[in-house]
View 1 (cartoon, one colour):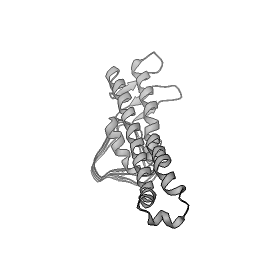
View 2 (cartoon, rainbow, N blue to C red):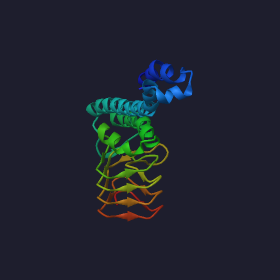
View 3 (cartoon, rainbow, N blue to C red):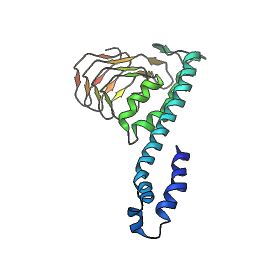
View 4 (tube, rainbow, N blue to C red):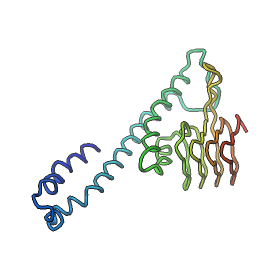
Length: 206
């Protein structure tokens, strides 16, 4: 994406816009005008291509880890050597960059596409996920749901400082609304048309 954008700037935008002696010529000369008008479009295309590359790389590494140790619900012990725990941490690490790139970017509405494309969760059409610390894996969100700002669909908990990892899928039915600052624990299921007031929470397996 950087090569696309900088090539356009160096070979098209600078010669046809920045190096033009007369400012009026930028708007009267067809080549200069097209180069000037196309700059935002090239910027958006470069940005979208970057998002796609991030999603593709994350998907490749995610699928490789899934082949070696598939995601499954359960309690992952941390006091013994465990391949499941190792790949859980690896998947959590590789997902963070892509998640923050999408959710903190200018096209935040593409975040559900990222999670579906990578395979870390299922977010159906019409659902919106606001920025959150978690809300990234082992989640199943129905149609037309709204997960408010800082609402955590936390499918994984660490019990104590160095305790076991509790890891269970969270399911949201259709038309579910989380008002904001909600915390949904592993194994929870919200039925269709549910509404949680801000700061409301649900403990494990409710």
